[in-house]
Amino acid sequence: MSHEYIPEIATDRDGNEHEVQGWQGDFYGGKLGFWLFMFTEVLMFGAMFMVLSYYNTLHPQDFLDASASLNRVLGGTNTVILLVSALTMGLGLLKMRTGDVKGAKLMIWATILLATAFLVIKGFEWSAEYHHGIFLMHDQLLAESPLPFGQKLFFGMYFTMTGLHGFHILIGIGLMIWLLKRINAGKVSQDHHILYWNIALYWDIVHLIWVFVFPYYYMIGAGGVTGGH
Figure (cartoon, rainbow, N blue to C red):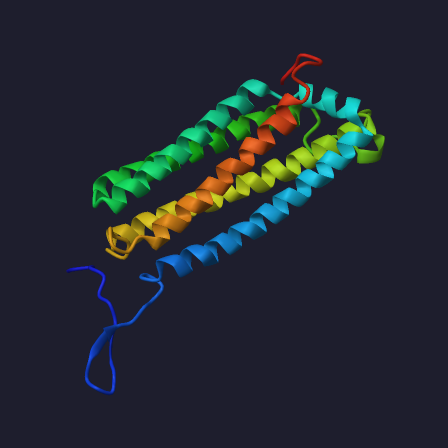
């Protein structure tokens, strides 16, 4: 059974046939719409960074001390993983645009594996922080925590932003699996790849957000107390 993309044809009053411009063919419209969606993502994380920056000016030493306690090795490893995953996703899009469907699918699978590795490493990191009692102050009331108030703010923002970012990673994995199904069904091809383009754009914003999360949370305390759970 063939799954090739079949365009819809409309006939005008003079009997002339015209291909209907659907979302599959509206490349620039599809890009513009998704860029507008990405803009809302930037606004959301941008607001969080503004809040973080504001409280950093009020509690600079607490933020430095809290940052120094994070595991920079795991955080740095995850940064490299996401950068490589952005490369594989981009290479896959290039392969699709040149007609190498098999190569594109291999690159998508590579990106999925890298994204999964990111979540696994983050899970180990969060597990260590849980056992050290700083994971949302699980073993004590927030008001009774011995941590300084500035560190409570830091870790509250840290778990909020990294958790939200991890949720975006999960969404990205789901989108890539859906993309593979669409490719197998012939709905995404060399000539109709706007879906692939937009998912690659989504993955770009996901890895770019982490590029800002890592230095702000992990590196500001690099010159202070040595640590890392």
